[in-house]
Length: 157
Image (cartoon, rainbow, N blue to C red):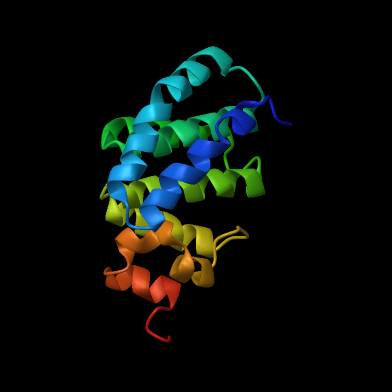
């Protein structure tokens, strides 16, 4: 299933998010800035593969855009990724991309959209769970929101 893209950019998938999880925003941004041109070129050159691989490429690009503060581009690419594998046609793969979109929405301050997407994902079979919402650092931007706290059962509900 892999075209080598994920192997070539596994460092991106680890170093940028690791820096964020460790509270080192400057290092994370540096990693995203470093890999962004290559990610953009890969997306420009490789789209046309199967929908799942295209969606993964777009999701990585969206995360990098979000990591360097390019909010509109991040949302655009995350939405494109989710559109390539709709839940109605690919339930598990589609829900994975919807989770990635919710993460981007949360990161760029689209809290209402992220909360509604999470609410939907928790109502259907997906890899998202209240437990994951509680422990995964990707959801920290939403922790102060009462609606998120209820979905994640952060207050012992």
